[in-house]
Length: 128
Image 1 (cartoon, rainbow, N blue to C red):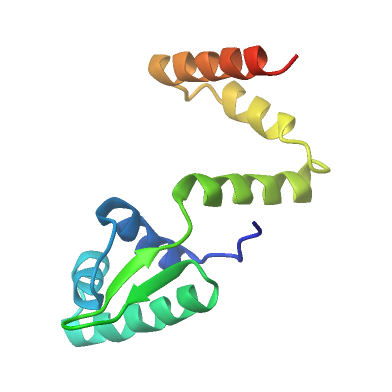
Image 2 (tube, one colour; image 1 turned 90 degrees about the horizontal axis):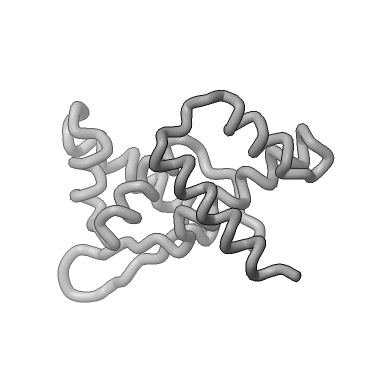
């Protein structure tokens, strides 16, 4: 699946939905824009939700009471799509230079290096 570009503001809404599974407009406004007056925050969030819904990144459940919003795109899929987009733009589609640069940056913790090593071992075992 190809995902549309998601702005930083839209991503902040998705992050809440990923962590909470669902939320109302008010809950999103209070979480994402806690420093803004509620009415202004709700108007901003309502616009972001409209844009995310048009991009088919979220869905809403209508019924009795406040509408509940749900993410339709999961974090890993969006990360994968964004990384592939960067690879297409900068590396002729190859993920290898991206991964190499991330590893060489030296900011991987011991746990992250172990997870990466385990993942490479799993992938190597799965492919002939």
